[in-house]
Amino acid sequence: MQRLRELSGQVLAMYEEISSTFSHYQASAGLPCTAGCGACCNKPDIEVSPLEMLPLALHLFDQGLAETTLESIEHYHGFACMQYQRHSLDGQKGSCGIYPWRPGVCRMFGVAGYRTKDHIPTLSVCREIKQRLPERYADALIMTTANPPPMMAHYQQKLAQLDFTLGEQRLPINEALKYCLEKILTLAAYAPDIDDNAVA
Image 1 (cartoon, rainbow, N blue to C red):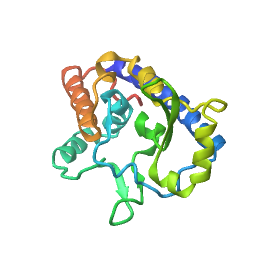
Image 2: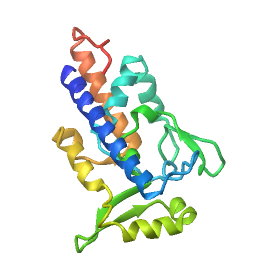
Image 3: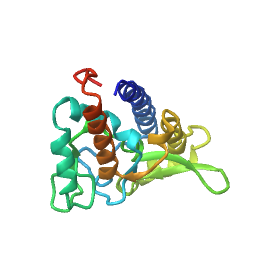
C-alpha cells in the first residue's frame, strides 16, 4: 500500500504541473472555459488510465468510502462520469464532484495541443469555446508556432511513465476508479498491518 501512496503523491505533483501549464495557456490565448459549463464532463466516452484515478481511490479509502463507492459504481447505470453533478436537464451545465482529485484528462481538456498526421502542432478546442470565442480561437490557431499549446499526448505520456502497469491501460472513467478501488481493498485485506490511515 505504501508504494501506491508514494505513486499517488507523484501523480498529484504531476497534476499541479498539468493544471498550471494548461490553465496558463488558456489564459494567454484568451480561451477560458465558461463557468458552470459541464459539456465535456457529460460525454459518454471519457477514458482515463487507472493511474489517474489512484489519488481519488486512496482518498475514498482513507475516508472509509471505498466499499460504498465501489458498490455505487457497480449499480450505476448512467452514461458518463458518475462524479459529475448535473445542474441542467441536458447535463450541459454542472460541476465536478471530485474537483481536487479529478484525473489528468479533465485538467487538459478544453484547450490542448496535438499534432496532425504531418506532425504539425494544432489546437483541440471544445465546441462551446469555439462557438463563444471564434475570433480568439482563430488567432490561437494562427499563433501555434509563436505561442505553442501544451501537448496533451506529451503529458499523458509523462503520467503513464510514472507506472507502466497502471498508466498505459485506458478504461472508461468509472471503470478506472473501480479498478483502483478493488486493487486498494484487496491490498488492505491482505496487509491489514500496514498503516492505512496515512493520507495519500
